[in-house]
Image (tube, rainbow, N blue to C red; front, top):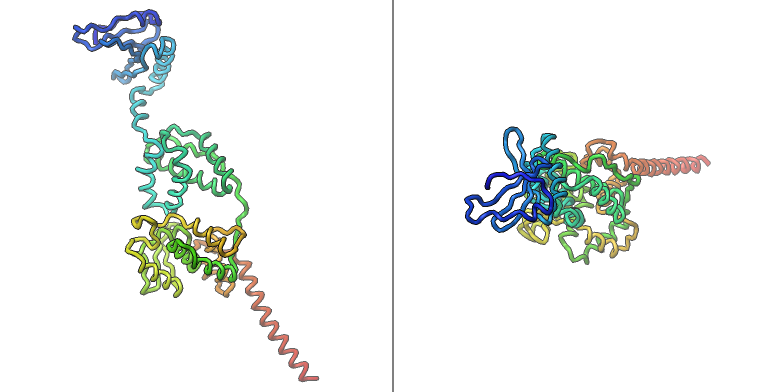
Length: 397
């Protein structure tokens, strides 16, 4: 680059600048603006004219390209140079900042290359995360640079999900996004979590739907004609054991011990390992499932190397075939397992352990069923007493 020349930049003088001489040892000529310190014009041998900004920070020289003339004219170049100078004065290195931005992954890159590999080993709900990401989140944010996504955009996205689904579903989407940004912040990929400060939607009071014995009978009958046999097996196991959906879908054969009627859940909702006692029906179902393939997953997906993603579509078809019109969720199979247990006289403490609840309070939603069972038992005793009294009175007469 030839010796620096100073001049008062304006569009006319910039346009008149000559090309760098072909015979010059330098590749370009550089000119300095006399109005804005650090603003440069670099003219190449082909006549290309590029605005740039030179500065020093901590004794080191830096350079940032602003843009080419006449696409960018003098007034705009000066504004950008002044903004860069303000950054330097605040202790920001513009060149390093641009390099950092270029190195920041897109949302999609971070999710696929960093978040999901981590979540696969650390999160029980990774299957549910994957579904939300594929259907909604990635189509919206995949190509966006991770650190460019704003709180307002997250709020708009959550509001759109709310128009399609329930408040609780919208809140789960917010929780997923917050978890992604929380990990990015922890790994120093970004310096903020745009989800912080966003209030959750108020959710409806907890709704607990139990299937009656008659509905269970219809449901199992309808399952016989459902073509997705893997999904059917998973749904049956949910009702037979009361485990959570993700616990079943993430089940591996290495954790199932049919000889000892046990199933080890390595990653439960409360973070603890849990052993599930397998009843005869569950063992028979798992034995049949084991004979269907060689996947490491108890319920493999279309790709045997991956678990079944979500049996929701099959469940919807089965409900329709069974004539169960009232809204029922897959999670209600877990509630139904508990209600059937309580109605059969199983103590709440035992139900708590069957469900893997960490506290008795979580099992209290089934207490009214236990009360009803006790009332019926008490009534049976009362009927026996009444019968005995009646017999005694007749004998006395």
